[in-house]
Picture 1 (cartoon, rainbow, N blue to C red):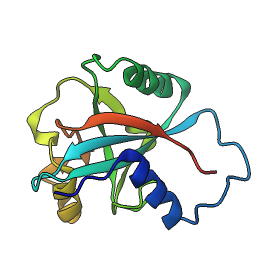
Picture 2 (picture 1 turned 135 degrees about the vertical axis):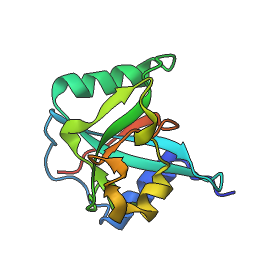
Picture 3 (picture 1 turned 90 degrees about the vertical axis):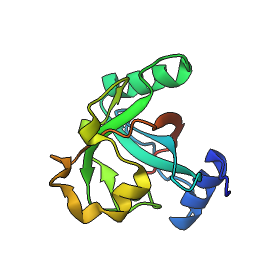
Picture 4 (picture 1 turned 120 degrees about the horizontal axis):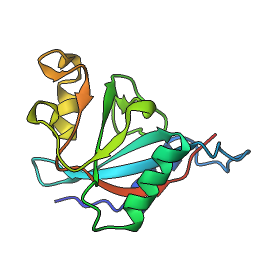
Length: 147
């Protein structure tokens, strides 16, 4: 079993994209976070996503501060394109659609590795309207935003 810490994953991600110091401060209305999910092979996977807007960012930060908050699962609309802040995956979540949930319908649940493998099917009978709500996702950390 391979275990990658959030810090190790973050360092690897930064190095993959140059790892240079940030020249300017990012917008206070944009934040990046990660969730973790256990893949079918029992490997811990990390998925980075962007959140926009003070209210949404504050909700994520409050959930991180209160680990007993039942709204710790992440949902959003899948965009089948790579994002620089999420280099491990071929897709990302549309930032304006990201939300936390406690319970969701079954049709939007899927493991991150399954979504990656079936990305060309997203939006049809698999994840209708491209809405993804991985039940076993767990909000994990806030990560630095690169300008």
